[in-house]
Amino acid sequence: MKKHHQISGGAADQKSKMAAAGLVLIYLLSLIPVLAVARYDCASGDDYGFGAAAHQAFVRTGSMAAAVQADVYHVGEVYEIWQGTWLSCFLFGLHPEVFHYHAYVIVPWIMLFVLSAGVLIFVHYFLTVRFGFSGSFSLSAAMVLLISMVQFVPDRRFAYFWWNGSIHYTVPFTLAILSLVCADQWLRTQRRRSLVLLCLLATALGGMSYPAALLAPVLIFLFTAADLIRKHISGIWAAFLLVPAALEGVGLWISARAPGNRVRGGASFGFHIGRMLRTIGECFVYAVQTAFRFNRQSPLLLFAVVLFVWILLLEMKRLRGQGVTIRVSWGELVEILGFGFLGYVAVFAPELYAGVSVSEGVGNTYFLCFLLMMFTDILAVTFYIVSHHAPSGRKTHVWRCVVILILLCGYALVFRRNLKTTADYQCLTFIRTGNADRFHQEMELQNRLLTENDDPDVILPMTNGYDGPIMHMPVVEDSTAWTNQKTAEFYGKRTIIGMKREEWVARYGEKYGVIQ
Image 1: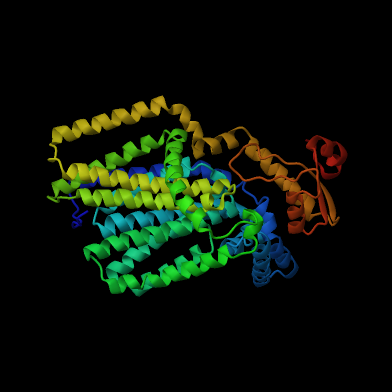
Image 2: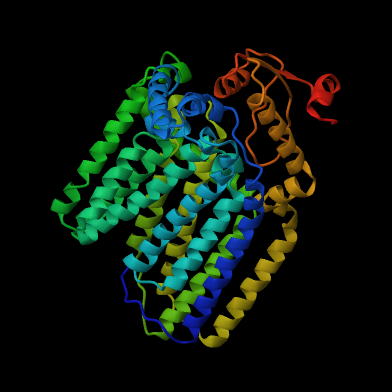
């Protein structure tokens, strides 16, 4: 795609700014139901298991340094018995509830900010800084992408409500796309801070989830190789990228060598050439199947696609009005489509190679990468088509906008039932039905029983997540169950036994002022 200079002004530019402002408003309004549920959020399951050591250290000493030290020691234990993703495990143990029970409500705010900031920086850099499109256009594109990510992500718990899930999947994805920005910025400007930041990001990715750790280096390698072949960049500066690549490689090697991986992956877990070759072929098949599955599960994504095409047409009209011509060759189109697909394919390799069941959060990473590929492909194809056809007149443009508007309205009408699959609908239903308040009351009582009672053996009324968007792993009747044990460790108890709520209320309700 040939670079052009950004030129502002004119009626088309004003429309582009209005579209951007409207999409920003829509995105912010769409976050209200999600953030309304945030006040009910609390730790659960793995949060207790990974955070127990740090929490108990903090309770004993009141020192954050002591909590961090205890967490580091716990990471060593996890490395030996469960998994090797050392940075993720370290961050797992420092969730907000380690330091204050009600602090967990900030988790969705943090994760939505991280994702939003990462996508905004990524889109703004490549569309505005790199290729010179208007800031309004890049802002509109980022908003459409973010709305799709937040509303249609397969599992909202892992995406932004659950600390462990979002730290292991949402955060690494964000770091991966920021790595692409830093790598390209280094190659174009040779700013040392870009290379330093890329080294930090690469090191972090080496200790986090494997899918995102593969996404960044694969895409950086492909685009760097293509630029080197065209002699758009110097091989000397490209060679510096070996430093962050080595840092990430070392981090991944440390993760992969963890003895605990054999606990999760089985005794045969390790490096095998045959398995690696088989995995490569499986990745292509599984990637295509998953892409079709995402489209079936979220047909409203087509609504976002049409909206994205509309803002593209606005941008192209603005450019034509300024006398700017964009040329996308067939070779460039194939390169963009191919590289985007290869980056998307690469993220499937860890799951298929390991051959074990993975958490729902992995599906979120696949979905975010799919959206990134899809919108990039739409942008490239649209500009390719326009660059090989004569520009249309005002009358044709008006008709095009009318057709797009009709398509949007018709599609929204036909698939209105699919609105129930959005994050906003799930969150509003959770609140409207009173389930959010019931869940909150149950968890408040549980915390009260665990913190205001010195008895080392505690009987808790069993809680219910009510199918809401919040991650919930309740204690059960068996005191030896994993969740019971980890909850007991977190609160410094010897045993925790779950009891059916009705029975617990009948036995202990009067003592604690609970009638239902």
